[in-house]
Image 1 (tube, rainbow, N blue to C red):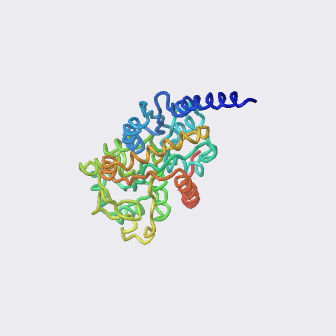
Image 2 (image 1 turned 90 degrees about the vertical axis):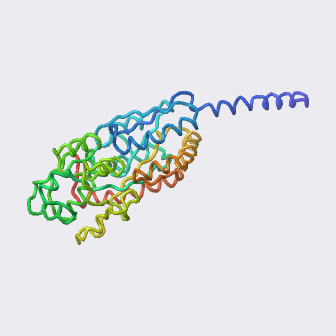
Length: 330
């Protein structure tokens, strides 16, 4: 090949580089969809909607939140696992990606093999809340009171949750297992509907994610007894932890929740990395940090590898809780 021909080829290749760069930067080329596998008004939904405007600005495309509830988060999660459009993400939870595999005999997706972790969005404590009128009727003012009543009247109290297999459900099952109490469990299709029935007096108590319960605690519509985290929440600093309740069986109790963005495993790595970077930037903004802190959530924003490690450790932890509690979903 002549020198002139080599030079022309080199110039031609160089001229193509800007076009290639533009093609690589074109994603997302249309609106991005974040599937929330639970109904509106729950913590998963609240966190997704807090993130969406910042991601929309950073990615240059609308970010649409779609609620796809069902089967403890499995329905919406399975849809994302099998998505091939390149523009669908999941707001996953400790339930969908660390608990359900131990509870359900058959899963519609593999939490590890079918997903690429993007980033942890937030960690939140659960909070033990009661209907105030029902609490007064049974004379329940503390966690110790609850244990006493539940032991004296097995099956009298009912406990609602956001669905079978959620962290809210498992926190209650762990509580029952450790204290040797029996309360009837009523699973709902999300935290929002469960809270409505709890505040309406149809249910007695619930272990809810703090962000979704907090407004109702502050308004007096719910009575909070304790948080389930190892430390007290900055949002409710006067509220004790369950471990501080003085009940010996609960001295090591800890059952927090977390939420994070995940992509289908088919999503190209560079696109996953871009969402991680932009999500981390959004979570570091003062507005989102302040908003999450006011809801009792601790912002995430770590690397995809760190999120993957968290999922692995939490899967092992909750598998033991499921086994000890005897919880199962048919």
